[in-house]
Amino acid sequence: MGDVERPELLPDCDVPARFRQPDDVVQTCLVRLADDSLGENWRTSSLQACEIRGGAALAAASFIVKTPGPWNEGLQRILRLSGVGVDRPSYSSAEYVVGLCYVAGTKGLPTGIRHRAADALVERGRDAGYAEVRYLLPRNGWGWLADAVREGWAVWTASLFAEDENAPMKTRMRVGLALAEYEYPGSYVPSAVEQLVADPAATSADRLALAVAVAQRAPKEAVSLLCCVASDPLIQAGHRMQAIRELDEIDIVVAEKMRASQTRLPTVQVARDRQREAAERAQQEAEAQRVRETPEAVVGRLESEVEEILGDLRSRGSADWLADDLDNHLAESDWEGVSQDVADICGLVRDEDVESALRLLEVLTRVRYGGEVDRAPDEAPSNAAPGQDFPTLSRQELEAYARTEAERSWSFWKGLVEKHGWDDDPSGELDHQLHEVDQRVGEAICQKAGDHLRELWNHLVGELWPAFMAAAEERDYGAAREHLATARLLADEVQHAQTLWRDTSAESYSFDPMTMSWPRDFWLVMEDWRRGTVRR
Image 1 (cartoon, rainbow, N blue to C red):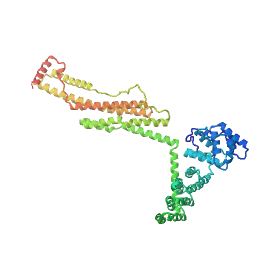
Image 2 (cartoon, one colour; image 1 turned 135 degrees about the vertical axis):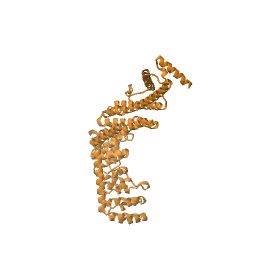
Image 3 (cartoon, rainbow, N blue to C red; image 1 turned 60 degrees about the vertical axis):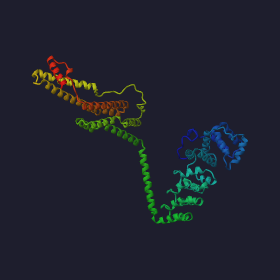
Image 4 (spheres, rainbow, N blue to C red; image 1 turned 45 degrees about the horizontal axis):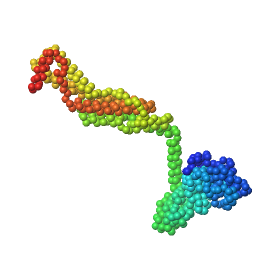
């Protein structure tokens, strides 16, 4: 068997590789069937035994008796004597493929029959079939393909062999020459021939011979091949000039261009040095690729990718510049600036890249450390809602805070009046107090709404995002997704807090002290003040 990796499956055949070889009984029957030195009884009984076995054994025997060649006349006589019917086969397409494998891989059969079976296998299986026959037939001794092409068969198999860089170069050139001489319809030139003409590993004489063979059969199609030979400094000078003389008979203009270019070509030694350097670079790249594909290198790349994703997620929660900008914009009552800060904060946690990065991180770590990959959040059933462990502030709570602050200020003023008495103008004093309390409480609730925004940001970067990162680093992806869901709820609260802050900044706060409980003397003065205010 050849030193080629055998394909596990073949087209139209679901039989694994280990079952595509005959057992001892079938192998003995096939060898005896084709052995013309044995008596007719031995051969007919072997064919009948294959018929009884059926399936791939019958397919292999049928192929043998039908194969053209010097053995065919004797096999046809055995077929008539045996009474076995092969014109209407009872085997399947997959069994026929396995039968071809039997014939191609049985060493005791005539080589011509094995070669015919190999060609039939390649015709059915293409590249996979070629790999199979390279495994079944000896590694060397493929020169029979050149004779087969000249006889008019195995052309496709020969083309695949000529393109096979693992095959011996001398044999490839012999087969390639047969392909170059083969009379294709429409002056077709096989890609295998073009590949061999351009191959620097082939000898100068062989490359020229291929191009000349094509020129004799299809002159116009050979121009590019002859130019390839004439312009390659690795080709000997005499061979280059011979290629140019061939061009003279096909296209004199192209021939003159090739003749003029000869003086610009580097020497053979320089060309070989360049070729050697290119080969060394290719070898180094192949070695580097091999190193990159080692388990250690793959693990290293996985860990590097995981760390890069973690670093990106970690950096999202450390945007300290956002906190500075938010403080400045709140202090300046810059609505547009605060709106942009809120959009940036929400963008940190609502960005779809965060969820995608978490999912990719989960897959990579599962590949690196093993285990099943958890289902995505939209696939995993969950009855638990994400926690809301972050500060909140409703409009009702802010209004209650404002009333408490206003009542506290009015109560403090009442205590001063009770201690020091009224001014000469009680109504003026009440007007001043009303303006002062409303202004101070308005500033206080603006400050509280702004502080709530700051508190939410600090909670995100100080507690929630570090918890999310800790879960991701510990590969607890269920907890990480819950923290991310909580962060998105926090983003909703940030937008709500922005609305509260904007409304309190835009509105003038007003508190009616008459809604409070007052002593009688205060109440009478405030009633007079209220009536005077209404008259004014």
